[in-house]
Length: 299
Image (cartoon, rainbow, N blue to C red; front, side, top):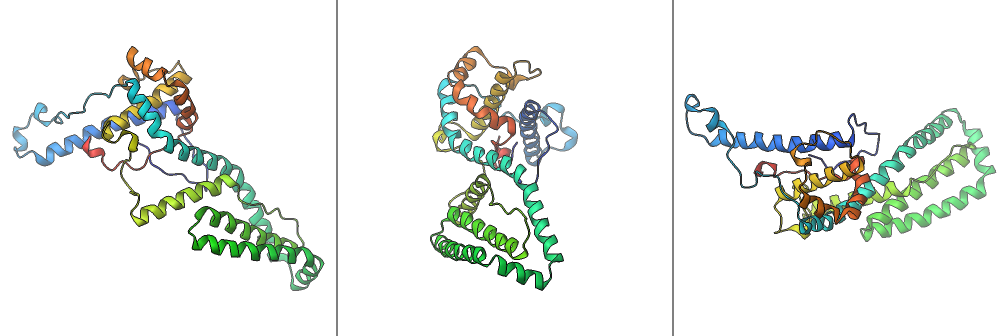
């Protein structure tokens, strides 16, 4: 299964291909379901262990043991329900790409300032500050204006504006330090995709803290509520991702039962191929992730 998480402090290394990873997720879902069913059986079985047989020890049959089947209506509902998650996934993907290029630059800038602070003496600082006084004062006025706007954004709980303004204030402060030291360190603003993603995550955390959004649990979306169970939605989503990967690479082998589609299923998926194709880069990059599935034991 996949977890809704993204580290923007480093690069995640994948040792398997996207297709292999997708197959692995499907297999793990099935294996976990069997293990959980076995645990449930053992915890409720009152018969002595000596009288158990291979047949009685097997997991009890569940109503939804069969692989869910695609129909055009279900594919359409999946596409609609995934829309908000796709938007979030695109934000994560954009942020990860921006972060990969940003981190080395940020480390270089921080190191540049730190080294300068160690070598500068008070006389040199005073001389440079006087030399660049006009530019320093201009930046100081910008910072004062930004800080007022940031305080207003905080009062309004405007998380996005607060983050962007805070980044501007910090970056401009560092540029003042560069002028004061009389050095040539490059101080850039944090790329917008990173701040956009941080804003979305912070707003989500605020909703979770206020009880307006569950921090855990699997939310298949309002479009399928009452139409599909969590089990059906989850497995169909995974199979749809697998189908998209197979369209991208028809040479994929060993797809197993979950990757075998009937003519009717193929027709249903093909009818929405354009929408599914848009998700392919997010499936391949593993950006389209899930929340924690706390109810897997009910499968």
